[in-house]
Length: 176
Ligand code: 5GP
Image 1 (cartoon, rainbow, N blue to C red):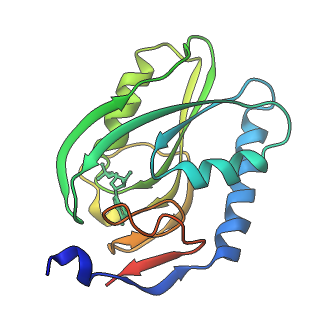
Image 2 (cartoon, rainbow, N blue to C red):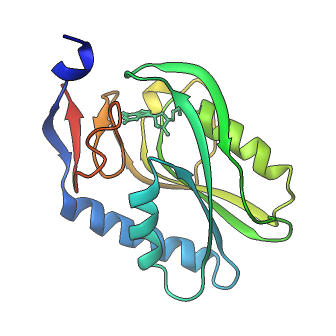
């Protein structure tokens, strides 16, 4: 059988309670930094659960938009290639924009996104990532809000998939 069917979530790296507590903290940090205008851009698909929990902890008004990129084929290794699959619906000019991403690994995807979005003249552009794997970084990309720093392990759950599986786990687990 293929590699896909043999790999499964094993140990729990981050529990649902740990994630929920940290996401609430990040939400308040972001609101504190942008008390008025705040426009959040989520990167599909992996960030959708992080986004939905995050915005429910942000008091006051926040607007949303979505982008979709593809940086991974099936499997657990990066292709190094980033493709824009879905662009934004709204302009960013003069807005305080926060990109919401599931995980920063090599940094290729975020660097690509930040370059595209900076060209659209936001007033401020910042990035929030639930997870960061600094040991894997190929590009020194700036991420202002990091949920958790983790070791170089392939993780699933809380929006993160392996071959489109396991996004629905409430916790984050190591694939093994
Ligand atoms: P980067 O361009 O920083 O190497 O990769 C970013 C993207 O790779 C993430 O948005 C995510 O889709 C995927 N990725 C990186 N590490 C992991 C991981 O441990 N688990 C999963 N499911 N996806 C990952």
